[in-house]
Length: 113
Image (cartoon, rainbow, N blue to C red; front, side, top):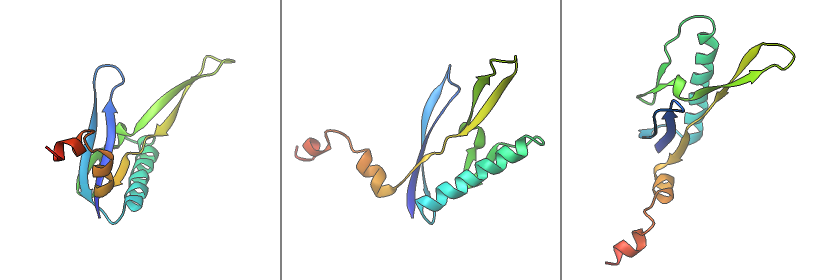
C-alpha cells in the first residue's frame, strides 16, 4: 500500500521542520504498530546502554529521538526532578488521503482556467 508519513522535527528553540515521506507498507495500521514497537524497543535499551537512535522501517531511516520528548516534572515535597517520556507517533495516510487532505485551496478554480 502506498502511504505518506508526516511528522515534525525540531529542538523547541532554534529550528523546526515538517518531514513528509512517501513509502510502501502492508497497511497504515501495521506501519504505526511496527513504528511504535521500534520506539519502545529504543526506550528500553537506551536506559541500559548506549543505543543508536536510528532505525529502518520500510527502507526509510528514522531517528527515535525525533519522536520522543521528555516532560520535566518537579516534586514539590523534595528537590527531585523527574522526566516523563512521551512518544509522538507520525501521521500516516494513504496516498489518496494525503492528496485529498493537501489539495491547494484554489485547485478547483485553477482547473477551470
